[in-house]
Structures are given as structure tokens and as C-alpha cells.
Image (cartoon, rainbow, N blue to C red; front, side, top):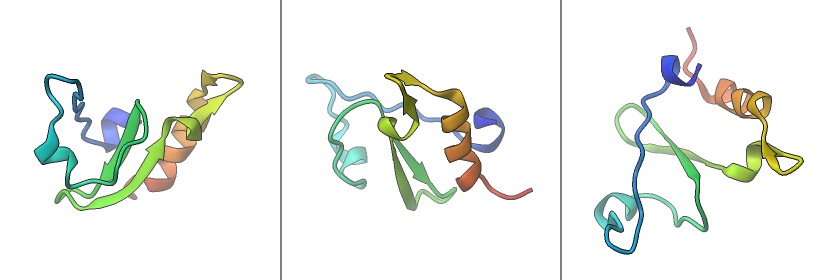
Amino acid sequence: MLQQNFLIMKVNYSRENQNRQFLSQLPPIPGYPYFFLLESDGRYLQTLRNGDFISRGQYDEARFLSVLESVAPAG
């Protein structure tokens, strides 16, 4: 579902490479991992925090898919 409906781009953040130019265009990041959903033209849509799909201290695939389905393009 993720690969069929979204372009996935991993952005590294480290002491050596903070990707300031790219990340300055997005809301502040309080922790990692963090997911930003952007429109196909790069416009910011919304933020997904990893806590949005954690259940009982672990990632919950069903919750993650539910969040993605709510924002996936129709069709």
C-alpha cells in the first residue's frame, strides 16, 4: 500500500549532515522517526508522528495502514 500510493524519501539527519535546506521547509521535528506527507508538487500536507501508529510499545501495522489509507489518493 505504501509503495503503490506514495513516493518514499528517507532524509538523514545527523550531526554531520543536518539537511538544513530541505528540513527548513517543514515543521520542526521533535524526534525520530518522523513522517511528513507532501503533495506531489512538494507542498506540505500533514505530519505523522510515530506515536500515531504505536500500540503496546510496538509499531502496529494495521494502525499505520489506517493512517495511510486516510490520506492516500483516491483511485
